[in-house]
Length: 199
Image (cartoon, rainbow, N blue to C red; front, side):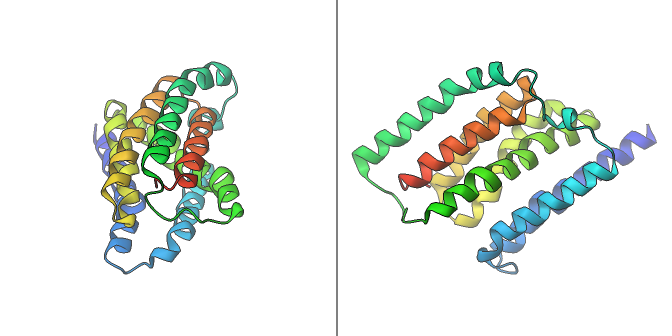
């Protein structure tokens, strides 16, 4: 019982240190906004090293091809539906924010940003919470933390959008335990949202 209590405190400490504190430091200006992607990569490296030290299997983190096709088929309707809504918003109201980004940013989004975010906010977080019997809180915690990381943009619509999509991706991951399908959805919606100037 004491061991479980210690593990719960440890998990809460990890969440505060890796998921909350860096964002707070950025919001108050102690970490420059321009360091946001560097910070994302650093936190991801720390988590990867932690999983290696603790010998966590890749399958436990959702890195599996077993149900990949079925998982993609499941997440596809929501992904396409949201992409259509974003495109309709663009056609009716135009760009909301500047979308004049270089092509290599999209490569970064697809191959670095989306995978690392899904690893941190779905894969590793679910494993972390499940380890201490908190998996029933995963959906809410995951969506809130995922939305919170976007608070650095100081934009209400971005917060609401990421909170909503965080629930969708969290629900999907909770049921399929497959990180590849959520990375696929995240990459596609991320490209559409940024290219149309929504986010």
